[in-house]
Image (cartoon, rainbow, N blue to C red; front, side, top):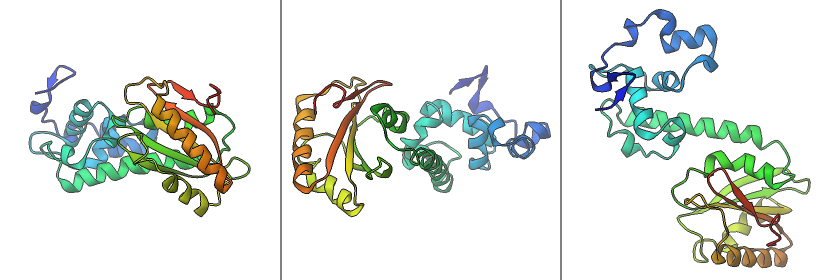
Length: 236
């Protein structure tokens, strides 16, 4: 049983209809806009209906507490969501779809700006990648003016030659007519210090890029709100 604001959430049975009209999430959004809503209120709108014992808002609060906040719902599986009473497959799918829409909107806003420095790359990926509990290897594909053509996850689970293969990295580069690429992966430990394996894989990819005429511009390792740029450290 989880406590929230002095209440036991399993006993939180006030329905949204019992709330004053201007405190109800839908009415509040229509009156003052979506920015006025809390994370729980936005999630309650997606959930739609609660259970006999708990309102959609109470259920939303419980999910956010259990999974560590709105940001972590991206990493929460449909199976984990449906473990919560009141969240069936349809609601779980709606939650996952809404989180993914938010991620894509944020990416589309950022994708318009050219990549000028490691800081630009960090701004693009940090809030997404710093929370991953496994290593994700990602590649940014750039045009001749450093505009971002695409950003693709190449592998998940570890960084070694059997997973990060040059053909997987460069076939997208060729398809997109990319002039250069930037490599990015995260360290779940939070420490972005490059390992020998990180350096070896980077050198292999640089050599492969030279053969086909696509430059590896940098490799960033993402830690917990900190990063390491191979270019800045003169590692490439």
